[in-house]
Amino acid sequence: MSETIIEKSGEEGISEAVEMAKEELSEAASVLSNIAVPIKAAIPTFIIAVICAIIGFIAIKILMRIIGHALNRSDMDGIASGFIKSVIKIVLYVLLAVILLSLIHVPMDSIVAVIISSSMAVALALKDSLANVAGGFIISFAKPIKAGDVVEIEGSKGKVESVGMLYTKIVTYDNVSVYMPNGKVSSAKIINYTDKEKRRVDIRFYISYENSIDEARSIILNAVSSVPEVLHDPESVVDVDAHGDSAIELVLKTWTDTENYWKVYYFLLEQVKKDFDRSGISIPYPQLDVHQK
Image 1 (cartoon, helix red, strand yellow):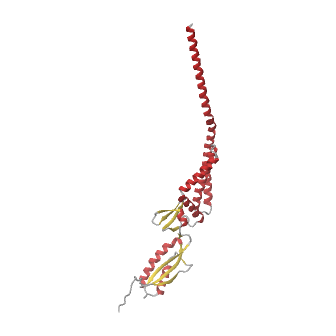
Image 2 (tube, helix red, strand yellow):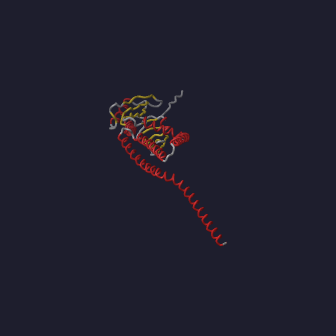
Image 3 (cartoon, helix red, strand yellow):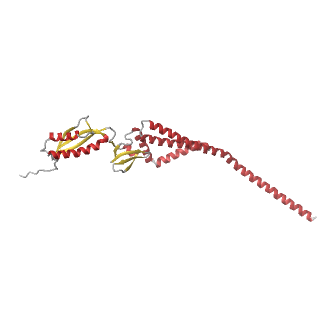
């Protein structure tokens, strides 16, 4: 009798344990099911976002090539076209990021808020850099300089190589690269030596008061006529510019193509000195006559 009761109680305990295990498994399955539902729903969205990202990157590359070819065929110089391409590329990538965020159901209000707050933070942190970006726009569209120009800006003289988003690169005659902030370049005094096709060569010569002005003028003009790079129109002239303390100052004004400026300048400076020596025309040193009573 007692054995029968023990067996029944053992069977009941086992059945209760089984029921409890079933309940626990059921609850765990329910929890996992609740977690899996949003994951399953989100998987297609992430796949679509990845596909759109790949398509977007490819589309931006193709579009930038088209824009590059269009700018190259236009009359725009290399500095302006490069600057415009950089700005367009940044804008396209920002638009792609906004589209991808909207695809994964990030609220548009949140996106706008993040963009505005980020822009304000960046503007405060990079206000000097933003001034340089604005200066780059001014340089690109006002075109005071272009690639290949020989310029003098803030005491730096050389050839303009490029204008980037933030800096203008100038290579000096001794092959030193100078990077100047665009904001400073756009507001500085710019001397552009190669903006025009022709330049006037001005050279000053000094002769003694004992020498003939007409003879010196003839020697200088003969030297000018021997230079093939000198232009005949406008005509070259030699004028008396000043009566100095020790010499008469003559100034030669002649014209040449801009690319030949220094060649003509250095040649005439040397040739006239040699011709003066052969003709006996002296170039006096500064002197002071003292008369004692």
